[in-house]
Length: 131
Image 1 (cartoon, rainbow, N blue to C red):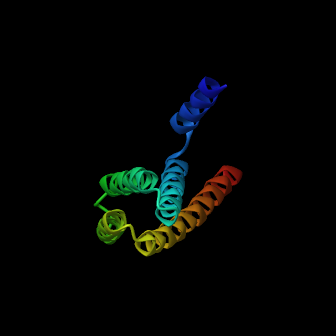
Image 2: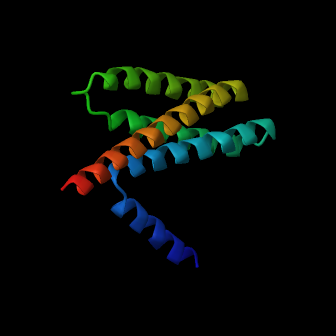
Image 3: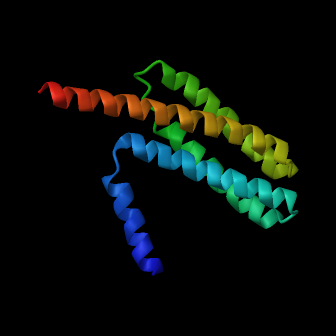
């Protein structure tokens, strides 16, 4: 059963459009930050450490994937660097408030990208109708 799920996940990633991949990355980061917060609050610091490091890795991947030919990339890069710093601080200090702040940012960004993806999809659907 587990192998079938892994194959499904792999197929989902390989066939997903770029906008969906971006949303999947945000979903992963959000999940890891939530698990890190739970670890901190439960004083299970191994769980907190593991998940905050995973969240930081996703944020770093989002930063590395930016296309700097667009002006927004520089602002997003600064935001991702800030997020990474705060996740490190949350992990070092075992302070869930830092992670909760980043969780809010990640949710807001993910929701914004979801709306953008809907707009692009609607635009593409409109083009198909015209053709």
